[in-house]
Length: 212
Length: 256
Image (cartoon, rainbow over all chains, first blue to last red):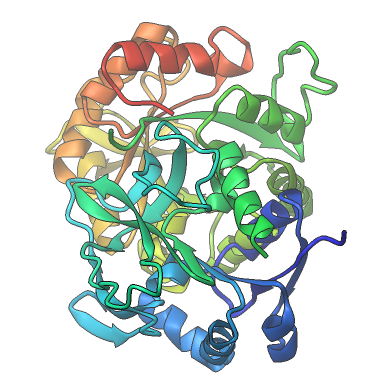
């Protein structure tokens, strides 16, 4: 069996080398590129992202990443967003009072964290719903590495169609609860950095690669 | 459950080699930062910090190579500081595989650098190192602490607590607060200084300088540190990361 191919989408944001190495360690054949067809046809697409929501969205659009993601999801092809790469999947982000449009794959707003110390920087635990495949083999004691000042505090998507399975939402708490990960058919995302989360992160990436 | 207190070993790196080493068992080369990084990772370090003390800027390539090789083999966050003067320096370190970059003297000379880095790469990459000491005779600041340069040998007269607050406002993502009085003494962290900075900034504070015994760590956290950094006690094998974490846990602080 050949290793699943994963493209780390290179649009100028995120520590893509770390993502590449962590995915390789977890068993994928990894390529870093922004080439449209390569990104479209890979078994999995990883969308990294750090920094500002608006800047990432602008960079993503400039690299036609919004198209790549949309086309892949329309065809049921897996996409994994990480950190700001997760945030831009929501409807909008509000930074410094300025609202920016996201990809709107999920309703909801990325807003400032409300906690005594921000950024939320370091290792935190998560609460995962039953049936998660991303967190298979991981326990409530496992910690993941977070670095962010913004998050989604309210999950607004309700499943109205019983034929579709409801998205699985994983939560973490820093000051208040926020969305730490989502598994929604071909579209998955984590607010934390699995590529920097030691063995727990490696397990999560391995779980994702196994679904490809 | 809540955010874990981070335990961060720091390695001084000179021209690609670890300065002053101890031979850990099963370690092929204690002078190789990559090998040391792997040991610390295996022992449960939450992050790693490399302080590049290479004097000659001609040897920078060696540093980038060390960062590159470390990031290939260690899957926890890596901060690299020392000699960072421009956003291009930051860019090169991030490209090599650093997750965060420590900035110190260059930001004192030109505070706008903080905003420039934050704007280009995001605040989360920027760790502002503050080498601070209690004001000596003849120097007065509101907090009683001043910023130093040249490894603590030169005072600047700048209030260390105000500087930390200003840097946070300019876009620093984190403060590495190094007590030059406590550094090397193994007498414990300067908890009064930590508490003052904690009161004035809402970004994470890393306590540094003075760790000598296990019971030095919980007071630093109680004073408001989000993370504790130490170099020599880990480096010479006096303390192990696991012991520090067990001590913090016993004191009621969450650890990974």
